[in-house]
Image 1 (cartoon, rainbow, N blue to C red):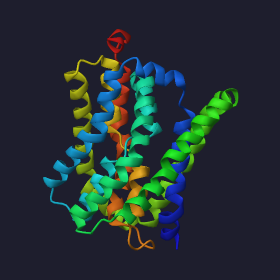
Image 2 (image 1 turned 60 degrees about the vertical axis):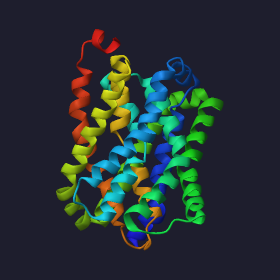
Image 3 (image 1 turned 90 degrees about the vertical axis):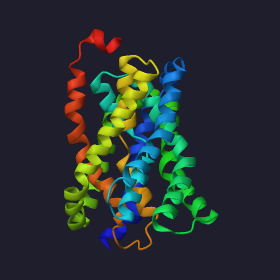
Image 4 (image 1 turned 45 degrees about the vertical axis):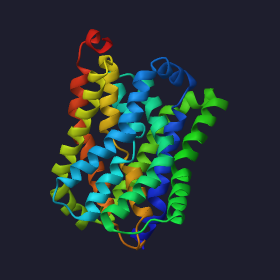
Length: 294
């Protein structure tokens, strides 16, 4: 019963809350600032929407993993970073306006890309036939837990800016606490599966994250972005939304009363990603100010 509650209610609620916090943090000033540098914004969207899923497919094809685990890694790659990527970018001295705009654009775009590409991945890895009903159902669910809360948060900030500015930090802290509690609940409900997953998948997901960070950094360097923009692009490319990945995997679960194996990569990823990234972010934060501005 506990697992069924996590799969059907708790995980979607956690994602909804985090996406609402993301929407609350959006301002027109951020969008205007990012649109003044369209090359960086367009490059970031294309990298997240096209290059990251392609790298995930290539990565799992080179690994000896179960088909459902491979599916879970690809699903995770289809989920662009949430509000935490903005926090990491701020700490690292990146371009926060670009980070916020990229997160917003890629998450709104995921309403179209995530259901379709996820179900194609299911068909490829599991041999399950995909029909229009499946795509419509997953699209509606993603719309409810991703787009609706982002728009609600954005509208609330627009119509009640003083209230939001006064309580923005508390809103983010509360949403993060709710997210951690629910993800922790998911951990404890399937501790045996996840313990084995950390042992077997931890190094693979760490390697995958390093490859994605390198992909974002290389794209920024290759297209002549500034160092701050390159840092932002690397973090936005390297950080995936594990909560959304967990929700997407559970949406596809045939037995709602059991923890889906394809959700394991997202939960393991949520356990290791910040341990892996915080040393890097701290190192980036120590760069001289002149280097950041260049």
